[in-house]
Image (cartoon, rainbow, N blue to C red; front, side):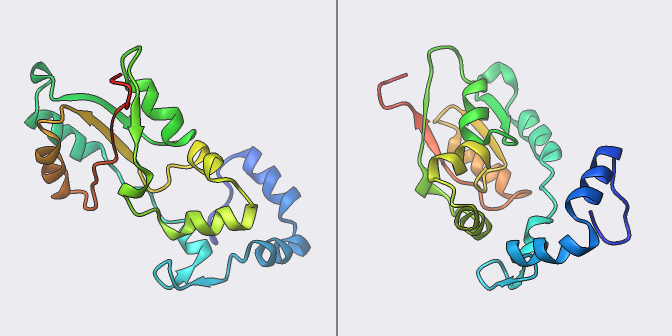
Length: 171
């Protein structure tokens, strides 16, 4: 809940009253270090980092699809990485029997995820199962066009990466 704005729903209002009563609010902030400044997170508070708005991908994806029509079979799948992280979202866009191998070291994981992991004592596997780990959208495409697609997307959405390939067993 942002200052000056009330809770969005009745459920949020109830949670806000129950979990963050005036006396408890300070304890929660202290326990989670919400006012702590993280130098590695662009010299901003943890709270500011957690409240950073998401990127909007719609316009860029529409442009991409105009540039690479479906009939060329260049773009083979699109996934907005939300709840369930990469593990839960990427397999949904693959044909039956196909797998993809993701390369976790192929992109920079934003430092806020390391902070959350340490604070909660969460395993690497669980972090990748729950969070997007800095990958907000995945385009599965023909390897012949991958570099061109990254270049095309870079204009509107910087920091694109090759993050995987078909599974090692050929699927």
